[in-house]
Amino acid sequence: YRDLIPGRLGGRFIASHIAIPEGGPVSDWVHFHKIRFQMIFCRRGWVRVAYEDQGEPIVMHPGDFVLQPPRIRHRVLESSAGLEVVEIGCPALHETLADHAMTLPTGRTLPERDFGGQLFLFHVAADGAWTPCPEAGGFEQQATAMGHATRGVAEVRVLRPAAAGSTISGTGAGDLQFGFVLEGTGRLAHAGEHALAPADSFTIPPGEPWNLSGCSEDFRLLEVTAPA
Image (cartoon, rainbow, N blue to C red):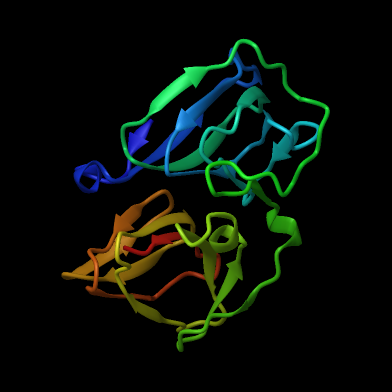
């Protein structure tokens, strides 16, 4: 585990870079979390997970992610060697409880089932389209349905430069402005200049400006934002 947000924004959010060197079956049990927001993004390798009332177990590959809505029962079944995921949750400290009475999968597929006001979401990167960012500067985004699934609690997208010399600017979101470099290199301008390399991350305080420039052709950034 690598803790990616120093101070965890006063306990509001936690972001972790998690690596599992050895693959195979995972010693897990059916459990759930008392949370407001939690997502798991696959960066390397693959992982197979079963979720309550979401059909057969899913397999996440690089670029895929899930929204684990509040209290959804789930169980990690197996993973590849060298699995890496980025996990983001709110609040930073939350309860995890076992449910030994439930067996997964449940045999039901209920994609519109409500879990604490949110929907389960499995984003498959291979099915996502790249479109120009609404901000000027020449970046492209792979947008996701996170805003709809969380009812506005959070937004998630992956960014990449559309051409050499592309830049993108913004201001810190109300509650969370988080970036994790999936691949490539670049420069972040915020309170100085900061070189970015793979697996680097940053958070921007609310309302403060930031800018990305000098990005390599293979630069990919996971961006997670949450309004106040």
